[in-house]
Length: 368
Image 1 (cartoon, helix red, strand yellow):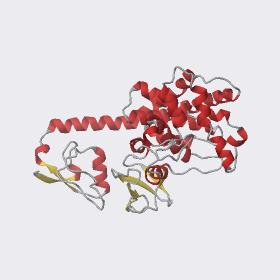
Image 2 (cartoon, rainbow, N blue to C red; image 1 turned 90 degrees about the horizontal axis):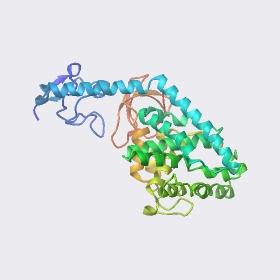
Image 3 (cartoon, rainbow, N blue to C red; image 1 turned 180 degrees about the horizontal axis):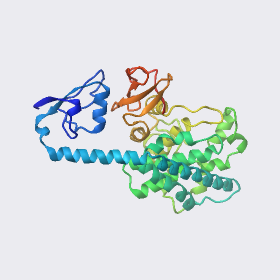
Image 4 (tube, rainbow, N blue to C red; image 1 turned 180 degrees about the vertical axis):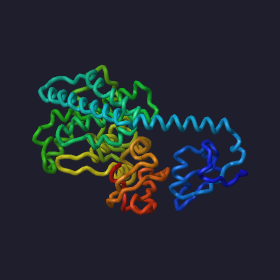
């Protein structure tokens, strides 16, 4: 491909990169044939790259360039609108109302009342729709959770995450509604677990955990007669603690015997549980948890579901400010395709660019 080296400051949106651009990275920071967007210019500037190989044929294709410019401006406008304080405030208020409404239902189940699937669906779907329009809200779900009313917080968050994962996997609108509702309802059976065990402030004994594990059975019993939930979603609720390698419960099912829908709930469930503060355990970094789910727990979860979650909450936008586990603050300048939760980061204090795929002891603690 014929190309010229063009000055970064003169680079036009929509121009085509003629060669892979490599810095001290395992993979190109920008690949050959990429159409230049504003985020690419930010990356090039972060790496102090002043000359860029641009395909000659593309330089005069003004219609392509104009289209890319308009698309880029539209995307940036959407990002600005999505992350506005007003939209975030609306989401948090809606979330808090949902937690309160779920908690009221939970207290009713403890007293023997039946589960109202329609009411629960109406609680979760506005949040699923909001999260669909504003992906950034997913980054902060674990921050909203508190030790008080934890089951309500957890159930709402799992429902939201299930809906987002289902959409990422291109499920139909009807399936997204069903999966989000099933995720919300997965822990309804906790209402039938002895509160002395359920709310215990110390580590659970083996006997305590045996009782806790019955909640999947209780959940299924509470919703099995509802005509509003499909049979495969009822099975997903029953199986959401099963694991592909047979290490889960209640039956220790393996591989194809474990529903894909139950895997969606399982991944959402474990991610939110491990990133939230509990009575007996501090919360972990979402990025560290994602890495654990993908690598240390490999073989337990469906990899497509895991990758969908990673793309939703692990791939932070370039220019995002982050707090690292060593206490330093930096800015994301490059995302690795295979490990977006371990990007390259420019440190605020020194300007040094570090690659945390190489410096494995460091990970992103939180977004700033």
